Structures are given as C-alpha cells and as structure tokens.
Amino acid sequence: MTTFPDGPSLAAPTRPLYYVLSAGRTGTMFLETLIRRHCPDVHVEHEPSPSRSLMILGNIRNDCGLFGARTRRLSRSHQETFHGRDGQCIEVNPFLCAVTDLLPLSTRPLRIVHVVREPGAWAQSMTTFKASSRYRHVIDYVPFSKPFPAPRPDGWPKLTPFEKSLHQWIWCNNRIAALAGEAEEYVQVRSEDIFSSDRTVRNATLTRIFRVLDLPIQAETLATDEFSQRVNPAPAGTNLRDAAVERAICGHAATEFGYDI
Image (cartoon, rainbow, N blue to C red; front, top):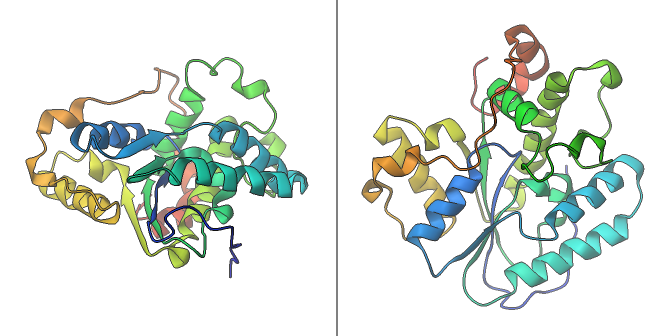
C-alpha cells in the first residue's frame, strides 16, 4: 500500500485542493479554457510555474534517490503559493505525475479529476508532440525532462520512443490512480468521452468532472461548437501505431483504465 506523507498546514485548511491530472495530451488544456470561460471567478491554471522544475526534481528523486528533501520543499511551496490564495483554485497539471505522492495533505481534502486517453493514440500524440513548440526541438536532450518509469522496464535502452511512451502511459496513470484512496473525491474519465459526438456520453462525463471540482457549470447548456475548438494539437507526424506492441505492453493496464485494445 502506498504511504503518502503529511505536510504543513496551508491557509484556509478546510478548502479542498482541486487537481486535474493526467499523463498529458488528454485535453486538459481544453478543460482549463472551458472552466475559465464559464467560471471567471475560479482561478484555474495549466502547469503553473515552477511545475517543470518540480517535475525534473521529481524525476531525479525517483531515478537516483537524490534531492528528496528539496523536491518535497518545492512541492509544498508550490501548494502554498497556488492553493493558498483566496477563492477557489484548480490546478491542471500533467507535470505532477512524478510527484503524486507529495500531493495529499492531512489538513485539506483532495479532489482529483484523472483524465486518461487510449494508450496507442496517447503514445502517438506524445511521441509526435514531444513538448510545446518552445521546447520541442530540445526536449530530447534535456536530462530528466520526461517522467519515464522508475525503475526502467527491462530492455529500456533498445525500445523505440513509441514503446517507451507506452510504458510511460502505464506508469503515470498508475501513479495518479494511487491517489484515489487518499482523495475525498476522485473521478477517472476518458478523454474520448469528453469530446464524444454522443451528447449523452459527453454530458455525463462533464457532469462527473464538474461535480468533483465543485463547479456550477451545467453540461447540458454547453454549446456543441465549444468541443471543436481543440487547444494545442500535436503536429502531423509519421504513424507509429502498432496494435501488437500496444497490446503486449499495455493490454492488461488498458483494461483497468477502461480500454479494450
């Protein structure tokens, strides 16, 4: 069983800590835009600073066992700064996969929306996208800049980037899912259902998200054209999909997260 550490009290201790977490490339930037558009009084932010530094420190801690105390201090400082301000704050942050164990506090309830995406499509998007345009051409050369599994699976150096991404999908989603037992409210939703052309499926999924985040948005009132406004799409790239490889690496884990591959 995972043991999560306690931390110092934050301001307004009865207010929940709201997080939207994923392995990335799941539509979380779209959710941030949607919430900001319909709830202007809510402070919602995608990957707020210093999230990237925290992810790199977390990766070093996980891989090498170094900087554990420094990682914890930065995590707590970030929580104090972001979630300690007045009003409702929602942190939308795929960068936190490496430090999920540092998120729970004994002094404030945790409310989590966990967004997953079909592993093969996710690995294709992640491998093609790599990073935002600002970092895309250098990200492969920056040590510890990606939250790859720790410890690495057998044969890691010989795996293709696509295969490595599939292992990353399992590792990141398992770490987020481990928070379910620590959270006051936790919901896991599929990215495909958020953007489903079936309004019943889409509205039911969004209703679950809005309930966990304590948002007053009524899914039924949202205009269909809002869901065609994709945010930060991946650039076109070579098709890397390989159904056999996807099943071999992610088959069992995919079933646990609602996918039959």
